[in-house]
Length: 486
Image (tube, rainbow, N blue to C red):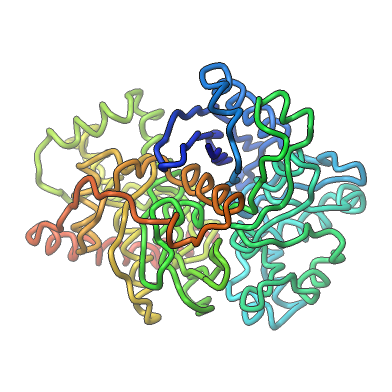
């Protein structure tokens, strides 16, 4: 048996997987995000731990015997979060999350301090990344910065509570701007530019390596053997890739989660920071990946559902049943700013073209299209830089909607493959990494592609109409940018 733990933004998901890679059961516990000021996004690290413990204990109540046979545990989590710990490894302040936009000025300052930043890290300095957040804390909360003895990523805080080990792995560490991504080691130059010493960083492992075993009290509470190994794991996107077998060059997936990701596996380090494409390490040794990222994907639909007072399935059904004409209404899904290709934390969401005739179905369809067009922008940023994109699998909660799938396939003008169990995403990939750490099997033997449940081909007529609508969508950002900056 193997356990996969995924610390997401909206909740913790834990899956129990058997030796035949069948999901025995799963449990999820929700999390809340605090937004005390504009652009801020924070969570309490202790809530991560309580939610994880609650989820595993709930599984234990249903599957005590299966948990007693767990051999490996994998961790996955939201990337980029800054968890500041004191000399007793206690959180100093709430963790600053990936979709926090307060550190825009600090990005410029970081690249001023270390002009080689993009060459070392392969990425633009963006407010969502970890290093600029520490510069912000140093400038605005100097007492907290002075007390900081260790900085951990979200999933690695869980590891610390589980095992006592301060450890991370390459895929998640690549999103901090402290990693020399090509060399797969911490960059002393980037740490110095942030005012940190290497001792503030956790020890680095590959995602499929063992980083330790559970503390005795945690093993006892969870009913898991004390010698079960905890793998390095992965950032959520790399873990999702492991879960759907995206490990060979050109393999790709599209994730419709809180954020949206188009992820392509690479055999080498191939950065393209000019268009805000991320170049990170993969979670397996000797592999890398590139990805475009939009900050609001399925979360945009959740926002609209709260605003309109309906459930997401209800809104999707209404939009699908309404007049099939795509209409003129446009939506920019920049509710948390945007990364690829704009790298702009000041961008906001916009509906353009509202009239007295606009109803709920039209708002929903425009939102689904807007997210699809943002993905198309990200696809263009990847392909313009020479990225070869092969078969694309679709994962994440938004993958449950066939209607959204047809919109996406037409906007991207490519077939989309929906794997069986794709909604499990990073948690299942984390369980696979836990297995690799426990058994030493070859990654190719474990991280296989699941069976395809369905393939959505692009409708040629709809793709042609979306190409024209996408051109209007792309024209809006440069027109509105001065207003946002003002």
